[in-house]
Amino acid sequence: MQYTEEMILQSKSGYCMPFEEQPGKEVAMTLGYGEQTHPSTGEKFFHHGLDFMVSHYPLSAVASGTVSGVGSDSIHGIYQTIRYGKYEVIYGHLANVYANFGDPVVAGQAVSLSSDRLHISVKFDGEELNPLEFLTMLYGNIKALKHQGRIGAIDIDDFDMNIATQYDNDREEIESLMLRYLPLYMDDLRHGQYALSPHREQSLRNIFSLGAMKRYFFEVMPSMSNPLGISQRSVPLACKVQNLLIGDFLDYLALRHNVFLSTLNEALKKKSTATS
Image (tube, rainbow, N blue to C red; front, side, top):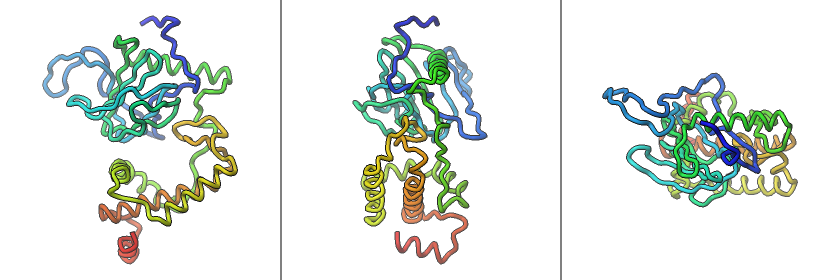
């Protein structure tokens, strides 16, 4: 497809790809655009997008836009549509949605979470496009902005968010538990079926109030890996927040699912369920 000047995606906040590959893991495209063969029945059918094997990946807005639809159907399950000018990008097979209908979004903002896979389809002015061509254009925009050194290019390497916490020895196990249980945790919080302890909630309020007072937030361009735009000087604050949030997630697992870290002894397990 030949992109005309009208089709160049304009974005004040820069550009971002829909998801980031995790270290050491290459993302596989399981179904392409156009005529395909069904893997089970062998029947030919037309696939109106791309499918990727990205289990419980955070998904980001690709540019400045607005959520124009959230719904569910029998083909793609929970889906989210975001309008960027005349473009509409649809994410399907979602486990959770963070940006709802009418919400404005910016490049790199986390807007939803994939389930066991991700479907992406794209339209321009109502006409369906091959998403690969759209993603290629996005990638070119990102590279061009970085080459020019212009503000708005999404660069997750500007700030190392690999912040040490008191849970680092159990990091791999916690990340594995989050892939499985984080959507349930977020749903229970949203529906009021689980709540942070008053002490933990107050601690978080105090930390964010202090951060706002010292102007820690939005010092750099926000991105999916750094949504508050914090800089290196706010690392101690970020460490405290992570300790509180990870601790609450582990308390939730113990209380609601009777799941504990493998390094936790029986005495600590009993104490965890008693105090949660």
